[in-house]
Image (cartoon, rainbow, N blue to C red):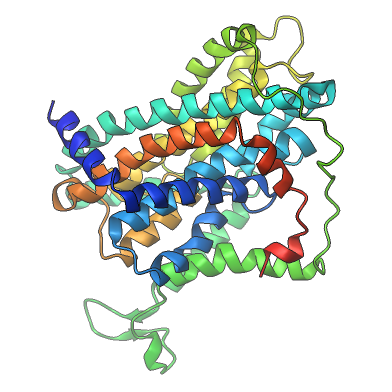
Length: 398
């Protein structure tokens, strides 16, 4: 009952005109970022962090804007996956397996609408999971001492192997570089400068937010310059959208897949470092083994669209649980959001729900509102987002 009362207070914060407008803007921009191959949620959130500071937004509105971009990008990633067979981001990879074959059968509109509904189901119920699980996890985390925190951060570093399972040596090397950068500055215990090389500006260390923006946003600019602003991606112009409302028989057929994948995706998202990619992969694999008795998966089976989309969006909500309750990012995008929290002088972790309840519950309430906005956008306006794929990158990068 106490949790629902706090959530009601959060809706009072989220339902102001400013926060509603920022949520709508974030959902729209996030869907655009997700639809453009190569950008995705991490880059989209990182790119808009300077905008949040430029507008001088307080903590709650700034986080509402960025998390709306996060959720919007998770929705948008499916668009290029289905139409171009090019995933908008890594979690949308599994959607290409059945989404594009279904589009080639003349059912692109139905595939886009079904994936939007599956995304809503996964994200909506994952947000309820966040409401009830995060406060309980906080109660456990308040009992943590130095030994438990050491074990927790050891677990966080151990999960790096899961993030980069294809090249764990590269992940270990990147983690070592990150730890090295983190040691730059004046030692908090001894007061001795470390790796400052006599440069006074480095005494305060390398700001985490600056490093994150440089890592995610500028890297995309350099990749764009490397290819001289050209793109060899397929065009969505030739793909027929067709009707954008899936028949009721298709929804009945896929409802079980959405439900199971929401649970699997949320569990995967709660695990630090697992993220939406794992949620999408597990959901698709499980559903294929459970339901693919006729060998239709990979040939345009609607369940092959519903499962990964519900799974990756549920994982996106689940990834917020360890970030808010423990201060450990559950995915790459929540690491960017974690940097934003720290830049706003808000320390995520067990005390966050006590020290900044208006920020936390306002953010969670905004997630519910944003999901409804995204469902409304991604069904009737899906043809508008498809046109974004036709914009040359040279006009978007500046």
